[in-house]
Image (cartoon, rainbow, N blue to C red):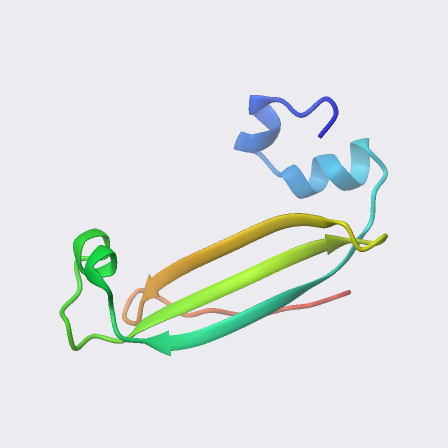
Amino acid sequence: MPGLTKSHLEGSVFRYVQETLGLKLMGSYRVVRAMKPGELDKQHLHCEPTDPVLEVEQVIYLEDGTPLEYAHCHYRYDHGGIILVNNG
């Protein structure tokens, strides 16, 4: 991405993309699943084998359909919730 610096990564990449580069976001594709924790989940999320884990996989697209961000994250069930908003 042209001109992207560490300070942009520490702030809002989306603001940089929209305000500095003049690109528009089209929307996103998200899949949220409940699953049993794997070995990495148990190690890094400090959860029990019977605790549910939320898996979120998402792609955020620019207006022309170019993928801007891909994320695949796991969350403990007892550490907050997930709110999905798509203003695309």
